[in-house]
Image (tube, rainbow over all chains, first blue to last red; front, side, top):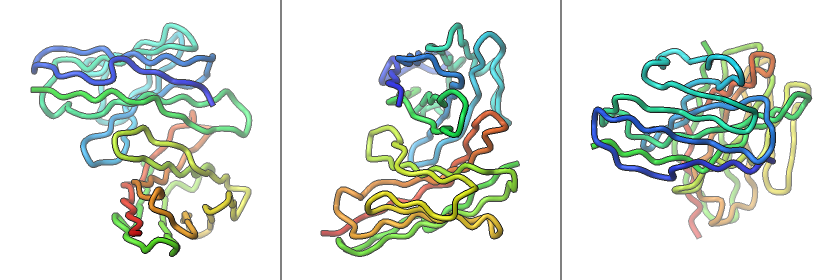
Length: 116
Length: 113
């Protein structure tokens, strides 16, 4: 599996501000995804980060609120914009290995965000 | 859209007993079914997965079964140990649709010594 790191690991932010979360993978991967895990809840896919094109967002998530960049095959960022306390969650990136039968997804350590 | 139902939401077992978690899904195009274990404060870890061309897969004390006709799959943990205590998530994916995963609601498993 790939080694995945995220920065920051946690942050406390004021409402109305924005936070950019970075996800770095130690090898080139085809697919990168961003998930949200609200306290005590399951994982919800925010978007698929596409290299060289705009991210693909799931229902209920929009680019203005969660802009995503994917400049190359090892790196992606997720920005949580104009934050409110409801955005307090753990944000996780994950990668899907390139092609073939091995479609496993592996998760980064997560970024724990608290919005005051 | 895709929907994954997971039961039970909590499960308490005595050490040494078996634990079974069941998931049902709705998308007939789904063909990839992973299970993740998440310990408190840690990332979800892939523990086992199964693809639609297989009915059962086993790895030491854990096994997964899949019934595509009935659209359900299950995780079986035998000889449970205290370190098996965690939240377990099932998921389903359609690799042809970009490897997106839809997760079940999770099962909090407590193994009592």
